[in-house]
Image (cartoon, rainbow, N blue to C red; front, side, top):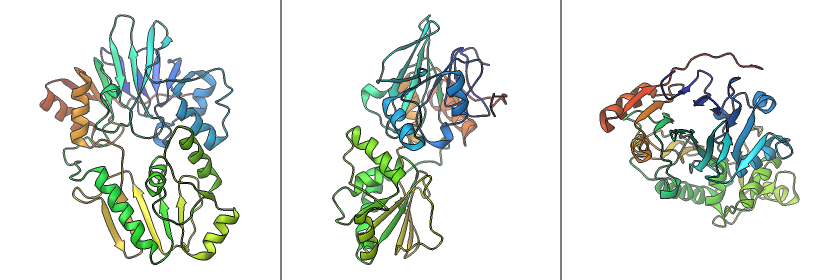
Length: 343
């Protein structure tokens, strides 16, 4: 362990000092901070519920309740915090700061008794708003796009425009199926809004998630459950958008004329749209900083010591690049294997 007590274990759990672990379980840490609800950050969550205090944003709690019908809203060890509200933990303070990655996503800041500030980026959008930039002395940073090759030559606004143009064009000749993971699918619904003039059909589970987004003020399109009379009429009529996301059963032979997959990962540096055929497309839409954004984010935090998350891709590359470009001490995480209860 380095002198700051920050690291990422082989399980993906992020250690911030002696008391806090993020997005994972560790038996020697009494508090778990949950940055967001994507599956790759939910490791050993059920174990954590039984042994740790859980800190998360209000929106993250509501999304988890909507998906799992969870008991999080009645548990006395779950604390849903407003942004930058300090939560006391063993002489230090923990704050959650929006990261812009998806609804409810946060960065985690631990301020120790001696004033030392330890941070974890989680997954983050770049640029962030000025009041969303976390300032810290030592930082654990996501390295999904840690390679200098991971650079987009298009903006997310351009990706969104290409997506909408594609949907409009394909609806002229039939129905459209859209598949995306949590967060990205809600972004698609937001973009569709009132712009397409056809019903948007989805599962009960996804309808529940949409209601959470609406609760927090997202200007999101109205959707109808697949069993409803409105959906039945639309499916017979032939012009509609059908949404699929995590937990939805995908048909072996889709009835929709066109399939559009939304990917959180870039495929081409210069173009967000990939055409497989005249019936199948992929669009890269991601609220996730690329390499340039990651470097700029680290610089903005003011961190002088950085651990790059080497449980993901490019952790070693990113550490070398940060050291060379910013003149700071940067090292990849240890990925130490650690036995966890219940795993």
